[in-house]
Length: 410
Ligand SMILES: Cc1ncc(COP(=O)(O)O)c(C=O)c1O
Image (cartoon, rainbow, N blue to C red; front, side, top):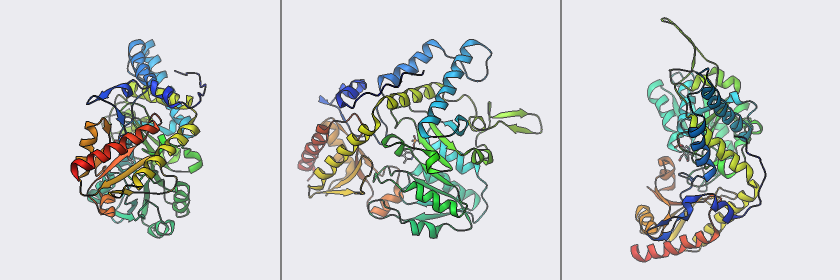
């Protein structure tokens, strides 16, 4: 599945042509899909690669001595190598396939040694996926959660982070990009501050991986988690990257086939990473789909994609910023193409439903970030999030649809 990596010049219409779903109608209107931070649409290359694997070379991996098993294993391991290259990991063995970003974080939280009083540092803008696994440690092992505050735009005070990390800190677990505010965290500085005190860092890259290039080696981060379905890949697959020595030191979270070396009546020896963390039949077809998504992205001019997304963000921010009944949440410079907002006197759910009648898909709710909602003093927000296939005119459709919603709700 090594497609030739010929870059194509950025052309939003050519990109859209790869995504069949974008030409459908919703309530007799052209679909304007602005819910990409929840999940992105899939190019034909991904759908085809998955179907082709099932049609042409399908069996279980790692177990067989027959041709189909070998071909499928090769496709699965090629996907691992492609992911490693994509995020700058030194070797494919540092890439664990999981069922999503959530499971990747759970593997780390469940795999480290925790004693009562040990501390985990989290920011208040984490997704629940990077909160609840650590709450389990608080409930079950007596860990203490230390919360790093943010400013109104999602900015982090590095001196405050430094002060939170003490001799009992076992992990700093923070997002690389907020799924609500779009704010990017200063990951390299966070890693430097934590490492100066001998503390490992887990970055939640579920949002950042699609909006910019990630290099885990340059970041020097210990663990990096992300998910396939926000990266134009399928659901059911995520990735945990770990430094080799960190993965080796993690206890396996799930037991079953493939993750063992020897099983006897009285003892069990575990397989080496990454297989130690992939109990049972892994997401084989989904890995092939993720590989195809990465190949698809690698064929694009990523700098141009990023510039396009930044232009969409700026157009949306400035248009929304001019409306006096809209409040924007998160105005950090250089943030990702995620725009959260509230409409005066209207519940975000009502706004989203009215927009849907006009073909515009946005998300409304707490975005699995309730501590952040508390910090912002709201219970929910609306959120428009952009992908490389969104047109500039779709921002204008969003604004027009919001004016209609205001008339109905105001
Ligand atoms: C910042 C962040 N972390 C983690 C997740 C969880 O990813 P998944 O649902 O794929 O496990 C999400 C998904 O919304 C997210 O936005």
